[in-house]
Length: 308
Image (tube, rainbow, N blue to C red; front, top):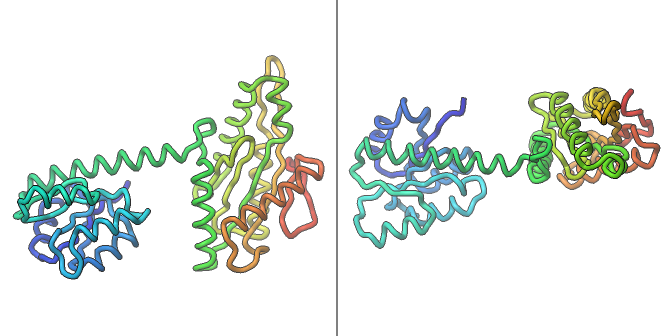
């Protein structure tokens, strides 16, 4: 279950204690504390919370500037910010909302009001997260879409550069898909893609990332494997997907796919997400132009039939 976290940025220790008493344990699981703006911004960027309670009057940098910094960063842009203030000036309170804050709470803090406003902010955050997730899912196959794949490739390349974490990337293209659409109609073509997506997803490990690249192409990021392990994972997946058959009247169409695999062990140090994608695409190109229905592994001359 998701751990609900609140970050409090306030230079008054009494506020932190009051928030702790009011919100834990029935509303939030964890409360992180920062007493100066720099620490608060760092904590928010390192591990974005569900809600931020932010004092307006802070040393070195006021809450308005802190809020703008948080809203300009992709990691914290959608985190609701509730200002804490003793100010009753309507113009100042309006400025707080103009900075991107969701709401404000007047000091001294009333526990019931605090709970109610944090509860509303948490519901807002859940809705935003749900909408964001839905926007990254391909509606036909239920897999992650191209935008999600691009982000995951960037994360995988960065993880390899920072810690040496291995990664493999498999690109798959459905063979003769245009002929399926032309000969049997787009309904059959859609069903073929849905069936392929379901088979790919069920063949992946929990920490792999299967995506629809676009059209009749799929991409799978194999986490924490390279070399022979990545090849084994790719062949196992392709073997299972090759068993997919799509009913057409009294007959059925068997799914055939060409695939290209690139892994971090055959790429130059400091490779980018684009390098990884281009490498797998190059291997896929060789598979498609080498007879189709096969896997080509970057860095190897050997090509395997995809249904082996």
